Image (cartoon, rainbow, N blue to C red; front, side, top):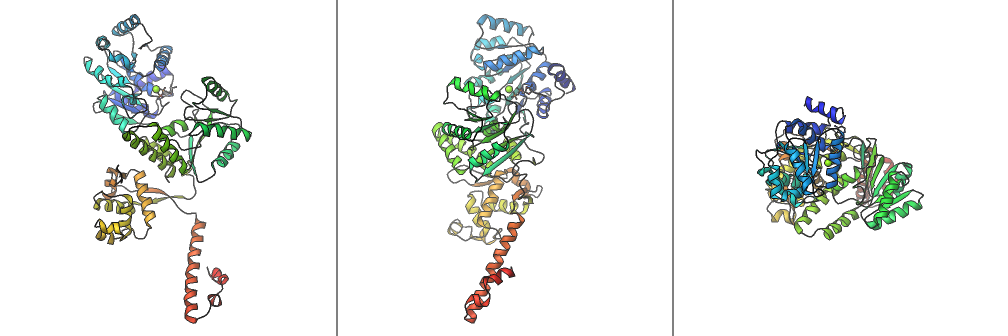
Length: 554
Ligand code: ADP
Ligand code: MG
């Protein structure tokens, strides 16, 4: 690694690797196939460029966009790393020249468009090179489940098979769903790959979810309190973007707008105005942001919940690119779920895909409801882990949140799920834990199990909430189907075995509310007593004690 670091300094001028880069590069230098999952901007390029510099021969880089390819090669040129690209913008003669140069070992990296791999002749040409490694950028393009499937990516494994001596494989993406990850490993035929998910935590971002409040009030309140700062407000539909922009302008805010319904010229102008701070607040649909690189965006507000966590984090992540503290607010209402469901129905035809999209939507909604640290939820979603809570999101900084050990309850729930053979839904599991003897409990023959009433001190609603919490935390899974059944995940095993504890951030009532609840309860009790005495004595209750006296007694 010391040599790698030396090269990083020499060529790129950076003092050290980022945390995630270290692990990926070390794995590649050990000779393993490696899959690196890092967010956009996480620094994936260096992960294969530095190992390429250390290997003899020419590393092939598969990259999906002609413009990206040229940028990368220009960048490498400027720091003195010999590289070239081959894509459809070149004449055949140019391609041949570059291949010949590569065969002479004149390039450390050769960027190749995936479409080139369709040609057998081209694969033969590549066979003449010394190729120690094939690096696949934007590797999610190999998956139909990703957002931009490229059939030519399926040819990559053929290229690898075609080359003399199997080169090492490196694959990179920012898309982290399990399905995409599995597809990458399978279709690229990665062999026992090291998989590294890193860099999804963004320490300078404070996440907040706002629920049950008037969105426009929250929005104007926030923007007023942050006058002079640049921010983006994302909304789900063009109409909403138009309306929000008008609304903000009426409030005296220098607002602009950006969505796919505007002309190219209008959009370019809007983008320009925002980049040069003529417009402070950009109201935008998800069309905004692909190409923008504005480092001093101080906040990103989602006026509607987006369709999934990938979309949310990509958009929210446009805040604070300069590393300065910045805010990400999500204004949630149940209506947002309906909007997104509708949009999914409109845009996704296959029922299988729809089910997949609904599941991701559910995970987005879970984010809005989790009592856990929001940053932790995000990092876990992308397959990583946070060492400690972020301490600054709306859940971490809420005074009515408390850490509670719920290992015992979790064990009770897990053992009940197991005894019910993991074949039933949340409601029935909760009924049995409660000790209920309702019709369903009896029909399915759980009357005996139910007599234990393992959690009878809790309400069924509380038990359901707990189960849902354990699902969100990955201890339990909801199997798909018309009636989702609760299943144990591998994490639950350790808890049942007593080797792992479950500590949860639980929303507790503020002390004042607890006292008030107790007083109300006592008052009700006293009234009951009073009416018993009144009945026995045959006199009206207020003669026994007036309400005011009862209140004083509390
Ligand atoms: P990705 O492909 O993951 O989106 P890039 O490879 O384009 O990210 O890198 C994003 C930015 O981060 C680039 O400007 C790059 O120079 C910078 N960068 C990468 N690694 C480091 C590092 N170790 N230290 C500082 N900056 C880095
Ligand atoms: Mg990249």
